[in-house]
Image 1 (cartoon, rainbow, N blue to C red):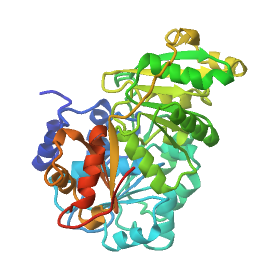
Image 2 (cartoon, helix red, strand yellow; image 1 turned 90 degrees about the vertical axis):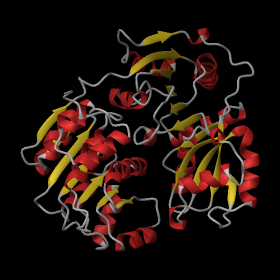
Image 3 (cartoon, rainbow, N blue to C red; image 1 turned 60 degrees about the horizontal axis):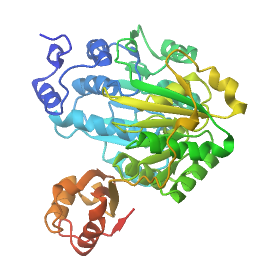
Amino acid sequence: MNKTDFSNLPLSKEMLNNLNEIGYTEMTPVQAESLPFILEGRDVIAQAKTGSGKTAAFGIGLLHKLQVKKFRVQTLILCPTRELADQVAKELRTLARFAHNVKILTLCGGSAFGPQLGSLRHGAHIVVGTPGRILKHLKKETLSLENMDTLVLDEADRMLDMGFSEEINEVLGFAPKEKQTLLFSATYTDEIMNISATLQKDAVNVKTISTEIANSIVERFYEVQNSQKLDTLVNIFSTFKPENVIVFANTKVEVQEIAETLQKKKIDALAIHGDLEQYERNDVLVQFANKSCPVLVATDVAARGLDIKELSMVVNYDVPHGEETYTHRIGRTGRAGKEGLAFTLFTAYEADKAYEYKNETRLFEDAGELKAAVGFTMKPPYITLVIEGGKKDKVRAGDLLGALTGDAGLDGSSIGKIDIYERQSYVAIESKKIDEAHDKLKNGKIKGKKFSVWIL
């Protein structure tokens, strides 16, 4: 029997069947190394990069011991960003399909406090959230951790990078002393090891970075004049024709300017940075993830936690502040055995910093060899339709699919990704069918009800 088979683990038949149904055929390195210890109830500190399967590693462990009939918060998962918290909660719900009535709640800043209070009053088994918002609920006594037996710190290094150290310590003041603590981090800094020493007891140290299949990424660097940066960016798109790309810049102002200029050049681009309201962030991330926008221009706030399975290209519009940031940025591409492309632009002023990155595999090339972008455009295959109804209105993906393929008469092949939030739903519609879908849904009904519908 294969040592990476989930059936080697002491899991219930129901959980094993569910893992098989959702396509979890064999364990990734981080799962194979950490799960036996997690299932024994041991504290674990694991070094694993984004996309390594770490969510399933701790998710399977905590769901295995969850007491569904005990309707109290038994697990708290702290994440650095709202996007990652949403992604973790989504995967946990998929993993929990083998059991009935497992309630998983997300508590993140940027969302209204009132609706969260209502959800908490109904109880939850697992809470996933950002440190600041979790702490606010604990201080207001709207969240209790007295029955918590598992604490997970996901992307702990990123939480520390974002300045959450104090909030994490305060949250821990509300937690029971006896608990299992699982700490996952892409890097092992002194601060991470100090946190492990403080929080964990006889922790098992799991390092799988060396055994994971490295992302296959071709890395190119181009020296350009500042005035030529944007033209060079478009020439990169024209030469390599990526399906989707994240362009990283170092400031919010620059991110906004790049996105707006690309739009003027008929390249569909959206900006994401810390100044956006939560609903604006949702709109941007949904469109990029569902292929309604090919270019996302971002600050490092978007470097992690984005649930993009396949990314063709990453461009560093500026030289990143350090090798770690560079690695996190380009690590979004070249996954799942596909070759990724990573480009870094630098001016003469940044040359010294850029050449610090030079090694035997990184290519420093002449930007003049890029194909000039004459008449080049980038348009998305889909456009997003927004329905003013979501989970609170009992709207399900099947209801939307039924309304679009039934009453509206669209082919299922014209409908892309469907995302359902508390009050809104987003559906990716093939670009040439968007007007037809909008008109028919606007004048029709979903589950016998009328909902406001608009094109994003």
